[in-house]
Length: 414
Image 1 (cartoon, one colour):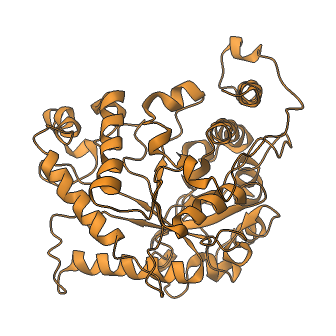
Image 2 (spheres, rainbow, N blue to C red; image 1 turned 120 degrees about the vertical axis):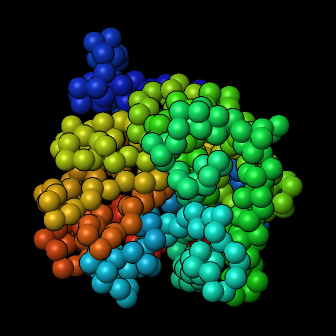
């Protein structure tokens, strides 16, 4: 690791000790109060040397470059299923736009219904209709200049009923992930799922016929064990093998060159060594991410500090590896029985994705994505609820970016 990273790591440990999350030994680590400014080797000429896909489309190359550069000054703000999921089913514009007047900078989608066993590829099929809606949303987002990202809640390979480990037998949990690896009993099944993803991603085209770039984060939140690909159900080597196969198959076998690949555990990792314990390698990852709900679940400043220290750790790795850093999922869901937290967006979240100690050269996060709103709860206030002003304040702060302050993401600067 570079010297810059080592110094940042000391600072990260110090922040953890302030939040009450580190050992006595950690609290004795040296605090570097004035770390050097990071250097950025990325240029418009050498972008692909830091990317997974050396043959990526020019729009995908531009997205990688612009996301990396964006983090120096802005954090793109988006939401999962923003064009279809509304609080109290109040349709129309996204809830972000209802609140702020501007579209989100990032749209989250999912391959879940696209690869569902019940998708017949027929116009009258509900799952196929969801596939078409997803494709339409991605195209509309791209036309506006919005960034598109995909998760994949893949149902387990036995009955394909659920993606939650709690719905599986002990035998299924212990064998499911290994079965999709090369040579496994469900490997061909898994390849067919990837075939469907490839066909859809290759159908995503802009008005000039160009392929639309997406960010894809397979097997997310793998450090927890609520999904069947979680840490209790596969070894680090199993996980790396599956991730690497996924990338190689889409890129090399299926010829898909409009994907950036994201690595996104949940929030359990506090050190670089642990974070990288299941990392498939720089040749397979474009985005270093983290999903984090727990540190923001009404945890106050201590929770924000914990989240901040983890993001500093990820951003330092991204600086060292010349990758993109992101808060790939987060939020605090407000419901009828769970009221808003005062200044949750403008204070706790904004502080966590910036620098509680004021070192702008350390924390460079490219985007943050909230989970989707529902009829009975919301992660983003839609303009009619009590914390509307808090979100609007957050969205208009200097480092926040909705679509109106997002640069052209699909063109390299001249």
